[in-house]
Image (cartoon, rainbow, N blue to C red; front, side):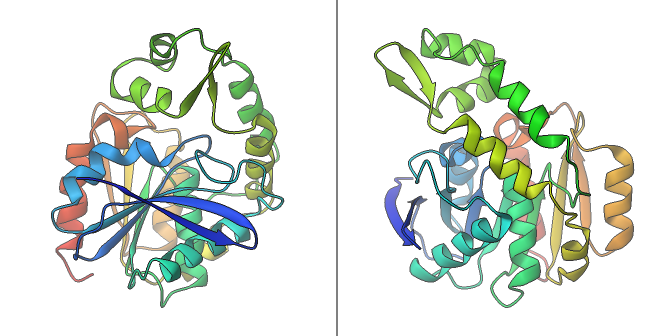
Length: 266
C-alpha cells in the first residue's frame, strides 16, 4: 500500500493525514498521546485490501501543527469531523488507541450520524483524574533526549515492533534524535482530557463498539467492568501476551478482530 499525504487545515491548525486510498468502507486511525500516524502502518497494510484507511497525525503530533493554541478534547473531536468532511469519508469507522480512543469515543457520542462503528484499543471512558498530567510529564521527562541514535531509541522503547514504532516518531537533529512534539503540549492535552469524566459521553454512544484490551492493560479491571456495565452491547476482547501498544505488537490479531467485528451488522 502506498500512502498519499493529505493536509486538512481547520481554524488555522494544519493536520496531516496518511491516506491509503481504496474504495471500501473508510477506517480512520487515531494514535495515542505522544504517538504518530505511522505507528498504524502494519495494521493499515492489512486493512487496505477491503477498506479506505486514513491515519491522522493529531494536533500537536507528528507532521501536524506542533503548537496548537487549543488542545481541548473538543478541538480533537472537531479535527476528526473536519478530516472526514474534507476527505469525503462516508460514515467512517473510528479506531483509536489510548488517547486516540478517547477522542474517537467523544466523536461518536457528539456526532452519531458521522460514525459507522467505534473501535477502542486500550482505551476506556475515564473519570476525571488530576494526577494524570504529572504522571505523563514524568514519563516524558524520563526519555534520554536527544537519543544518540535511532537504535538507542528503539532499545529505550523496548525493542521489537513497539520500539521501532516509537522510534519512527522521532526526527533527526544535529545533536541526535528528538520527538516530533512539544513536551508541554502533551502535558496540557492530557490535563484538558483529565479535567472531566467521559462516562456521560460513553452513555450516549449509539453505534456498534468493539473494545480491545491488552492482557497487561494499563486500564484497571474495575474500570473495564464499569465501562461494560454502562453499555452492555459493547463487544470486549483481550489479546494474550500484549501490553498497551498492542496495535503495534499484534497488528495481525487486531486486524482479524476488526474484520470479524465489521463483517457483522455494522
